[in-house]
Image 1 (tube, helix red, strand yellow):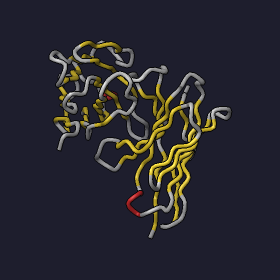
Image 2 (cartoon, each protein chain N blue to C red):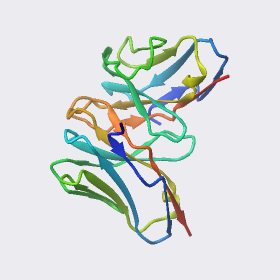
Image 3 (cartoon, rainbow over the protein chains, first blue to last red):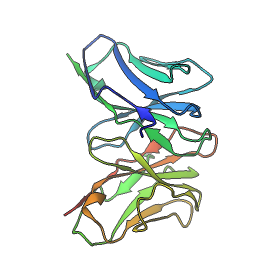
Length: 114
Length: 114
């Protein structure tokens, strides 16, 4: 049973518009969430994270929102650029302690057209 | 660069052969993780080291999988008597240590068992 779910396998947006990637989780013990970006034939690259004590974290064009009551988080990219085209993975910290395994969703492929 | 490196990048093995996959973490990083990523899936945890101690090996799929990190730096993941279902990308990640949630990934080793 998947503890981290990314229900949209793919998303297409136009350059300059907002991209919204969604993630749901089932384990209320998760206390830290991360987004990774992956290009073909490369490893995942850390993008942005959020602690469960916050509901928003912003870094440049990237903002992550956390809704603990709904067990839902989202990544907003504004404005989207063609170079953002990649697979985006949502991940959660598994046991409430740093230094332990991350649990990943299956990923969402974002395509940004110019 | 000073990122995580893995070798080989690609490995083709005949069913029944043993393979060894190497990971060089970021210098000074205490924590090291191995993940397995099947096609179309997110990375799945295999094992975790803190320095040379293997603290969690709950994700290793069978006793054919063995990992070590004898000096607390470089790690090797060994798969004995490879099977077709072992075909996947094997990712190594490191993090600075306890208190640090962000993990930094290498490019992965794509293993194909024929």
